[in-house]
Amino acid sequence: MNIFERTVYRRILGPVYDKEKENWRVLTKKEIYAIVINPAITKTIRLDGLNWFGHVQRVEENRIPKEFGTTRLRDRPRNRWQNEVREDGRIVGGEGWQEKVHNREELMKLLRTARNRCILHVPKA
Image (cartoon, rainbow, N blue to C red; front, top):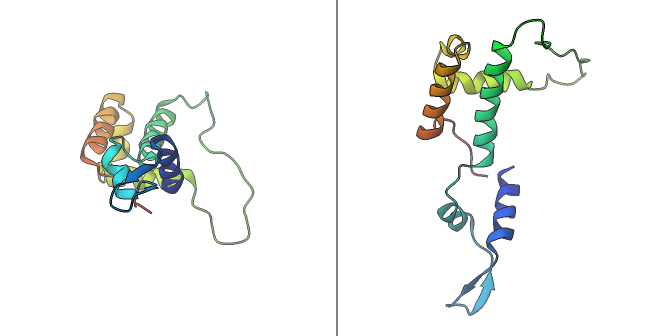
């Protein structure tokens, strides 16, 4: 996902002229991250997943199903979306993060803290 994001930024920002070599070249990864202030898209997706998880937990039982039934595949168990979100929540909010999810103000404060302090580590591949 990060590679695709950098490809899009390279396309938007365009080539740069290298005066030393006297030719045009594409921006490097470090140059792109120096120009672009927004967080990586994977971090945004992970934080939005936590926000959605909080919404689903606060929804009444009769409105939407909490679990989606699927058939089991033969190989190793796949990482489910809920497992990934629970791991991110543990990283962001510590052990008692699931109690904070039921209170919207607490969840928003938790997400703001995670966004401002860059708690979720996103590898730069």
